[in-house]
Figure 1 (spheres, one colour):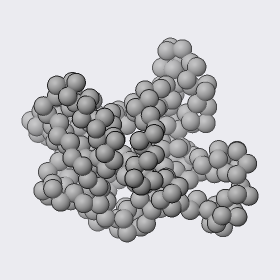
Figure 2 (cartoon, rainbow, N blue to C red):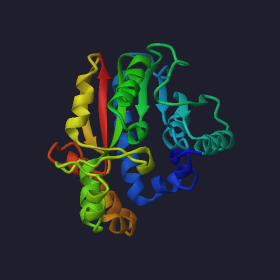
Figure 3 (cartoon, one colour):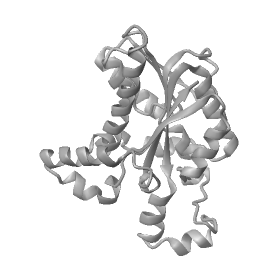
Length: 269
């Protein structure tokens, strides 16, 4: 079992997304998925849309979209998450979702231009070289239909710098172990589990792919994880006001860099 498989075998990803602070990321992502689906449905027969989720985890997004009636293929790398997802699908009795074991670097089981929307909501967290990131992006673009959409999620650098490096007093440790560049970019390896990026790195990756253009990039959780205990203790009415506030600021480019998770929404030309 490698570092990634061991992590997800012992981590309650489903519980995180069901918490109030986790719901912010989930509801934000679903909001924009639905926005792009509406654009697609305005140009073709509704109900024909096909969605691929690469790195589907325990199926939180894939199962929700399948329950809405969309045809969904869900590919997951870790056996633990795949087993959990298959169990939930069986419990729901869904026949319009197919699961696959595999990696974002090889989508060869899927034909070119097969999907209206391709979701890459986890793989970029765990790819550490420019070559692998480019390969994952190229594969996602390849299997997406022309004028379809690709959603790519990232973990952002500054949240870790602020909370973990400085906030929890780990600066000296990170410097001594060569985990930071002189510009305070976090340096990650597979054992560190998460790759952290800045907006300029995302832009650089996109620039290598001529078939796409950005629709928008949003802060999936914005300030939420900086005040997790506060968010989780909110009553439902206050939490809905927090969501309303979050949606008013999540597209502000001056705030993107400080979010924990960003969501890059791309259109295939």
